[in-house]
Amino acid sequence: MNKGLLIVFEGIDGTGKSTQMSLLASYLKKKGFTVIETREPTNGKFGRQIRALYTNRRGVSREQELELFLADRQEHVHTVLTPGLQDGNIILCDRYFLSTAAYQGAVGFSPAEIIEKNIFAPPPDLALLFYVPPKIGIERITAGRGDTLNDFEQEASLQKVAAIFDSLEFPYIRRIDATGSIESIQKSVLLAVTPLLRHMNHNE
Image (cartoon, rainbow, N blue to C red; front, side, top):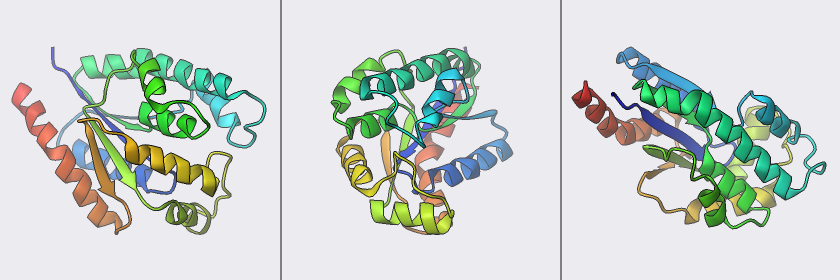
C-alpha cells in the first residue's frame, strides 16, 4: 500500500507559513502529486470552539483549552490524515501538534507532556518550522494584513512561544528562516521537501 507524506507548517503567527503552504501545494500539483491541504484548528465542531477563543480566551481553563486541541486533532487524524496517508496522498497541514506544544506550553504546560498526549497522531515526515523574530511577526499581522492581534498573538506570549519552538528537537524538523523574500523562503522549502518526493516516486 502506497504511503503518503505528511508535511506540516509550524511557527509563530506572521511567519508567512500559510503563503508557503499554498505555493508548495501548487508546485506539487503541477508535478502530478495528489495534494490534500488542511489545517488545525479544523473546521470541525472542536475546531470551531477553538476559533471562538481567538477573541476571548477567558471563558475556558487552560486544561479545557488543551483538551479541545486534542479532541480536534483526534477527529482530524481519524477523518483526514490517516485515510489520506493510506491512499498515498501528500498532506500539507497548517499547524499540528508542535504548535500545541509551543502555544499551550507558553501558558504553563510542559511541552514534552503535550507531545506525549499526541501519541495517537502520526508523526510528520517533515515539519517546516518557520522563524521570524516575534516583533516582525506582529508587524506582518498588523501592518501587512491589517489585522488586530488575537488573544494568542500578544508579544510577550509570542516570545515564549518562539522560545519553545526554538527548543524543540526532532529529526523531522527543518528550520526555515522566514525573514527573507517569499521567493527565497520558497527555495528553502523546496530544498527540504524535494528529497522526500524522490522517495515517493521510488515507491510508485
